[in-house]
Image (cartoon, rainbow, N blue to C red):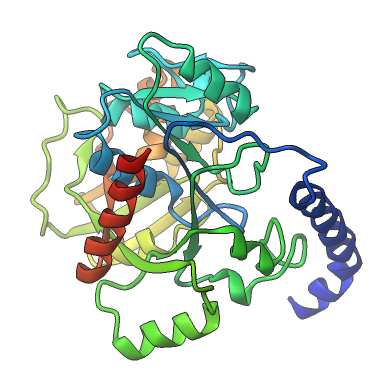
Length: 353
């Protein structure tokens, strides 16, 4: 790995210079940012995926929905086959708006879900609706600096913090560590459920937050498994232990989910695909074959909520319809004091605007 990093260092240097120059243009006002009169909250990261943006957006939706009648999410819509501004309807698919926005639609029927690769244009469209959006959550927009959010939230993975990472392609950082200075809030995500004060203070020391920055710590809660085909597969008891689990995942970081599922089975096999992978018929035929080769009867296929969106396409669902396929719901929560202060900061910002 160190040898590969050495080889890639010149490319990382050139990439870093380009990102540094771009940020300088924004800081100097040469590249202009647009600010808006309603609450605009950005959730993003310095690294290339895997920090838990989607469950954190969903946490914010649950927090803000009682107070904002026309709450909206705006994403790029990664992997979609459309372009420009698209406002999702109740019936949507990943090809139209992307997998994560589809998940928002399914989980929050009253939420406005929109996609646009140009966030400034997307916000203007949301404000032009009747009635206009009264709060907008920007998904994965930390590097999209043409919009100046009123509140910027930066996520960093507990197991892969940005302060120990390197620029692409030697590491996974989209921009240098100093980019964290733009954040109003830094959330250390995917923490173990029990976090010692010593570990917490060590992380805070390494982050070195500025006086205007707040640091919070979050962890994942795993809900009960949900069947892809409810008529064929009843929901198992939460403490049920399987002999074999085949994990089907197209996400950036499967480590926390793998650790969770290892406690639910004797044998865990992982079929990992690239983040936002669009599954083909051939992919699922191989998955089916691999599942059938697992010894034992007490076995299941488990996938993520994000992957579920793509697997529900009729031509793919048909291949797995007679197999026990479940998806794993995930929610974010904060440690007790962090939850109190994080919620307060978000609601005060949204209320003042």
